[in-house]
Image 1 (tube, rainbow over the protein chains, first blue to last red):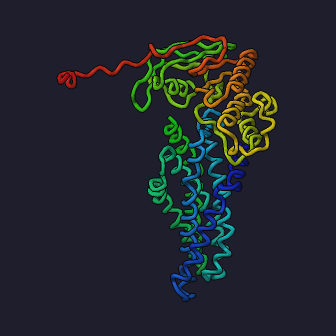
Image 2: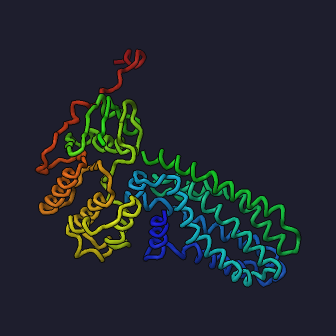
Image 3: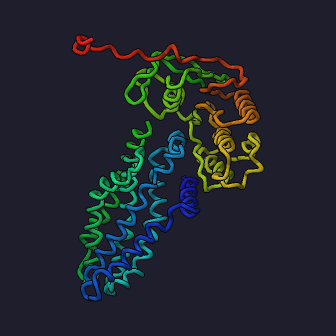
Amino acid sequence: MIALLMRDLKLAFRAGGGFGLGLAFFLIVTIMVPFSVGPQSDLLSKIAPGVLWLGALLACLLSLDRLLALDWEDGSLDLLATAPLPLESTVTIKSLAHWLTTGLPLVLAAPVLGVLLNLPAAGYLWLVVSLVLGTPALSVIGTFGAALTVGLKRGGLLLSLLVLPLYVPTLIFGAEVARRGAIGMETQTPLMMLAGITAASIALLPFASAAVLRVNLR
Amino acid sequence: MSLSVTDLSIARGGIPVLEGLSFRLVPGQALILRGPNGIGKTTLLRTISGLQPPVSGQVDGAEDQIAYAGHSDGIKPTLTVTENLKFWASVFGAGAIDKALAAYELETLADRAAGALSAGQKRRLGLSRLLVTGRPIWVLDEPTVSLDVRAVEMFANAVRGHLATGGSAIIATHIELGLDGETLDVGPYRAKPPEPDDFDGGFL
């Protein structure tokens, strides 16, 4: 398992691995928003949590179609399916590697980019907390979507259509935590919901992903 | 560990390709599969490897015993030859890769990125993976594609070595490998087209 994780991380950091794709997209979105909204710092600080969350979500989505498709194309997925490692652990490790190369950099970059959007000082902690809790769900749900569309050439469109509705609850509660935190309201309810969604996704979706992958490998 | 296939019927894309296939593979034995393109050799090998379920019949003794090598080698172009091989060695829980590198004369290429290898060199790397799996039954789908005469000899030697240590192999190939093993022509097992039912039959 560790070997698979290390390989995926290594591949992400090597040339053409796609590390930084999501991060660069996130950076571009949050830098462009103040330009398009205009110099209204009170409006910016109001929409900052939502924009940061939406940016993070779309950045995550951007890298999903490579998650399993590359392993499918070069035959590694067939070989992994016949390896001693259960397919459930394989997809879990793939999700983890995706989170480490996409979700975690987003979490770390978000506070810096919050400055550009005039995020209120109280919001930084909650923004980071909500992203730490929410982005793993994005990776796990995304792996499920990638497993569903793995045999399709140019399955990116279908993948987005399948995954975006599943991302909605995470987005709603994640952004709500950040928004409430930013204006000093209590955040417990959306935080619980967000943590619940993430925990349930991590617990259940790897089995679903492995099952659809088995069907797709036939 | 012997593999037995009993009355196996398989389908590809919902269309039956082979039916009524039975054979046994005991340790030390090589089975060469022959048959024209499209007869279902790849489907048969994928079914034996557990990548797809059979329509009917049974495959026994295959669980966690099989090292499968298909048309693609599962090589990552940005990793070096050593890194690729080490990865598969640790996934399969086997240790050293030196023997595998030596068997296919890959030592001089060990530090080269796999993307910079020729097609035949990639194939050699793909085949050397079998040696690090530690699995007793090799299931090989046209392993000699893009190999030169010398590399085919390396491959045949690797298979002989594997058989000598109690392993077995099923090989679908169109060329003569010089291995002494049984040959199974899957042609006679071609699935009959489904009988038209009365409604369709009325129009024929």
